[in-house]
Image 1 (cartoon, helix red, strand yellow):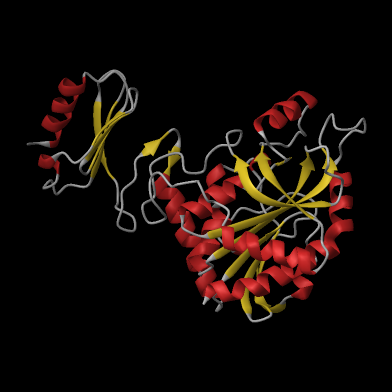
Image 2 (cartoon, helix red, strand yellow; image 1 turned 90 degrees about the vertical axis):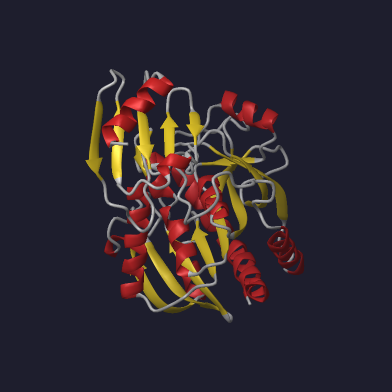
Length: 357
């Protein structure tokens, strides 16, 4: 069967009234979201072309190289082949510049920029030196990877993260977490500054993230699945690892560090939440709210990492008191609680070492 005949066959079969991509053995029928897979007569077809039938029924094809063993179609503006290629280029850059394999990856949120001082540093890699890597534009986020040891545990620290509100696509926001997994990290420790929603919270409180609410931020897995990274439909029942949580809670108890537990909600930012939005989040069961973390956890969970998270409640959320919210207030509160936050982080990571062997 000729390629044109196959296209005509697919038009007549589906009565196309939207875009249809014919790829390898799959036909993706966009408008009705019908996916017909494993068409046996496509299996033996040797060509590697991209076929598109537009809304008027016009047919076109073009050669598209198979990148790294897979071929991904465009959907909703996201070319997943380019997303994966960018990730691989960043990994290649890391391999060229850094001879170090971490076991634990740590994302340092607001107020933890000095945590690198407790690390036996072996190497540093500024984000700007990694081709295609997103660079943070937020004050207080230095923008580099730090490689070294905490105790005997090999770590990579993200000194500064990027956020969706900075204008990056969500695939760029989670690229660092994916890259750290490719570096070799088995555990991802996420930290952030947040607004407290529970009435018993106070500025400077630390909250162990037990679960999250992700429906207000774009899911980083939307689009064709990148099979090299993980399954199409990852389970989200136990995103935050129970063993890691037990270690963090035991460290907090041993060091007399007050540690709350709760549910973290991510909104897009950069505007702080309105009082009405905070009341909504209270109804949904959220304990704290911020502008990061959840999308990184989703991407890391997709890749099979063990994940834990601690949030620094740097202020009470809108409507919880009468004072207006500012980024300076967030930074000041995070800086004030930094010593005990750093101790909790350091001692927990040392104990994580037993899980990395």
